Length: 361
Image (cartoon, helix red, strand yellow):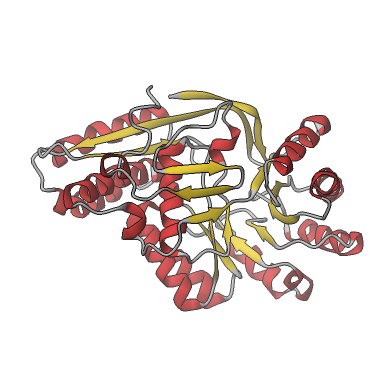
């Protein structure tokens, strides 16, 4: 499935002009259905369309004739066999989980705890230093639609990134009448020295930054430890994204003091992994952010159910559908700018198959 985007989604790691993903549909013998989504991203090159298709074909054989209650064992074996197709496993798990919810008569948001009916998201600003007019228009449009918080993608060059932050703040403030909340996302584009230079430049500019997500290359724990040892780095809370894909990574981050918070994404960690990260982070006192990839409402609604159901997240970054040229229609979730609200009572048939009848292929 491919959908054009309103503007290029660009980060320090890549750039794309269209959403491309695979919808995963699971149907049980009872007729209960669950749908998941596997997005594509330069961060996870193994999750290509052919690789996802191959995994799903392979998964079909052990799943056919298996009870939905035994799905976790099958998923575990598939993950051991193909550990690098991270998002493909997650999308399949979401579809199976939703089929099980439908089979057992449960609501997805309630399964996570049923704490909230409404969540408010930030709006991502792509890394487009070569298109300042596009950035200005995107930010003004977002502010006019009620977004008060902007997550700005930065690329790893302090002077360029500071100019991008100033531009976004000015464009948003012109509409809002006040400075927006600013979050930054490095997408692994920084080194320790450049990161510290940017922090000093931000301090001199007087622009407050709520958090900084994944500035360093994932897996470079030596650099991350060096960064955390620098007193200047404590000025802005540091959140990890690609460095924490499971509970084990979360435990390591907490025990070593590698971050202040975690960005949790169901598209990466699936249902079981997300639940384990959530519980681990809460026990460790880490702040939580819920994020998404460039997904349709099929995938995004899983993150929304987690955010609203658990009520555990300080920061919500679930804005993927706002990059589509047309906002989707979901009878169970209303979209009002930055705000998503769960409609009650939610139709049982739609609670586990969001947009399955309206998205198409």
